[in-house]
Image (cartoon, rainbow over all chains, first blue to last red; front, side, top):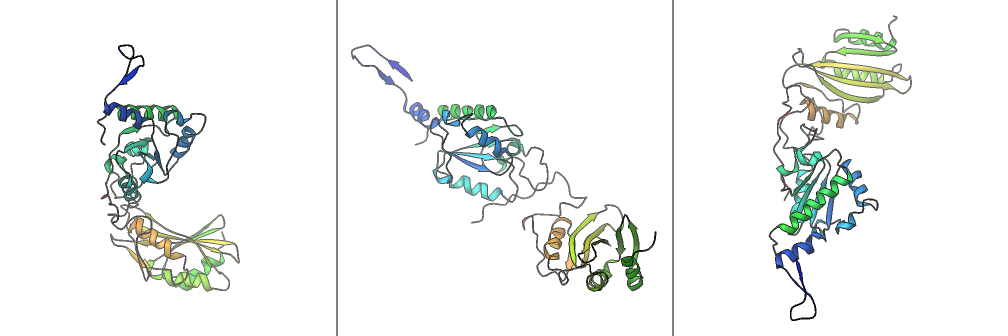
Length: 159
Length: 160
C-alpha cells in the first residue's frame, strides 16, 4: 500500500490492489477455532490471555463453532479415533480457511509413534503453518501466527 | 512358610488343575489351567471362608516365544478378609480362548473386552465381545509383542 499526497488534490489518497487490501483485512481478523485435545492447550491459553495478548494480532476472539471460524488451531495429540471428528470440523469451516498445527504431536505425531495416534495431522487435512515444540512457548506461537498472517497477506485472495 | 488357607483350599478342590502356587509377603498367587478358571473363580467367590467377592483387575500378558504364549491374570480381593489373590491362567496358540467370568462378576465385561481388544484373547460366553478402546476398523491387536510398532492403521473417514 502506498500513500500518495500532493498532486492536484489537497487530500492524500491510497492506491492498492484489491488482493492486497483483502489480505490486509483478513490477516487482522483471524477468528480461530481452537481444537484442543491435550497438554498444548495450556500453552494455547497462556498465549491467548492478557500477558501475551493474542488480540494484538487481531486474533483475540476464538469462535466455538467451526462455521464462524477462519483458522483451525489443532492443539494436541490427535488419536486415530478422533481423526474423523477433526476432518468433519475442518469440512464445516467456510472458505477461506487456514489450519495451524500447534505442537509437535500435530506436526508429526511427535513421540507418539504408536498404534493410537495420527502421525501428523497433514495426513488427514491440509496444514498451513506448523508450530513445533512440546509444547511450544507462547513466543513460538506468536511467531507462527505472524507467519500465518504473512501467508494470508501474500496469497491469492479468493472471493 | 506355612500354607495359607486359600492355597490349601484350591489345592484340595482343584489339585489336578493347579499348575503352580506360591505365597509371598502375604499375597497368594496360583497358576491354574484355563479349563478350570470358571470353577475356581466360582469357588473362590462363594466359599464362606474365602469370600473373594471383588474382581479388582483382569488383564493379560504376552510372553512372546514362550509356550504357552499368553497368560490371563485375575486379581481378586476379599472384602471380608482383607485378602488379595492373584490367579493366572496360561493360554496357548494364536487364537487363545478362555471362559468368560461375566456370569460371576458383571464388572468382568469391560475388562474382558479390553483384553480382547489389546491381545485378541476371546472369552467364551461373553455377552458382547467387541473392541472397547479401539475402533472396529482397527487391524490387529496392539499389545501383542509381534504387533509391528510402525504399522499404520487405515484412516477412518467421517461418518456420513
